[in-house]
Length: 386
Image (tube, rainbow, N blue to C red; front, side):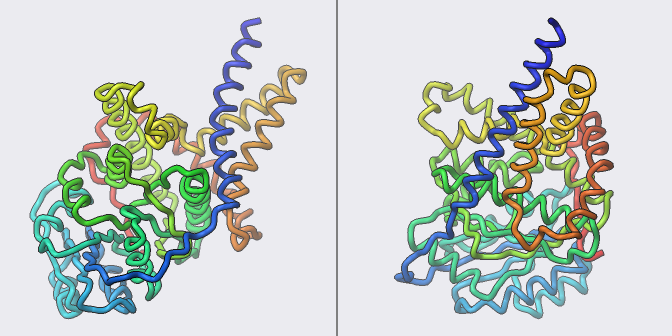
């Protein structure tokens, strides 16, 4: 009797988690890129590249970005140089980027963005945030301008992987595409805000300038997401604008990244619940984006959920096969939720090889649960160009 009760409690909880992912995964297949009319004017754009010890990649990234087809006089590139060499800063200055030297301790991306908005002249309409390793297409700013001219105040471009030389990098790239499907295109298709992914983001400049000083955690993108939702500003996903992001090449790097994500999820969930308590849940029921985000941030990390569903299915099949059919169905649904959003170009033999990296990653993710105390005070940096 007790085992049956435990079985059903676990099944219902995990079924709710799987259903959330599966619904948005299916919805993602029906999403189409927005088609905006010709812009009536060109807006001034500030492009921010926070760069912590990014000497190996930042110069090439900025040089590539400066090949935009957008008029040169209508945008400026700012590099927030944090612990970078003088030779790197000199090279950036020669490219006519505006180099801002970080003077703070305990580096975070939020602190870098604070320096940027405090220093930049109040002449811009749009703020764009890129990572130091990001490259994009020549029409990126033109497409951002089109969306902004059509009334979009917050947008997320399509981050996709580059330098996929290792199984870990390919797995990381696939994970990013699953996120793009479930949390961006799937959400937008059902009328909800897309999630932000840390770079390839653009915002109305005045809103961004007011929001940045209030950022408190190492997960600045999720804080911005929460602030946008509180202000009832819809986040639009633009899958037709690629931003190429260097993926983790090594197991240690991806472990650190996942640890940072877990810290961010706990922090942002705490902030969201505090906001709900302050405003009143009844009042915020009229904000479906906020309710959806709280549910989303309550979900376990996908690797843990995957491991839990498959492990329990295996155990129930061995211990009590009469209870197993519902778990078989749930395992299939979990697999579908993970596979449906993956683009066709990733469905190959290389993906199968990459999946062999999952077991140690799952183990490390479980281990990270016991190493989170105090970690939200530290800046966990992912190195690029290695």
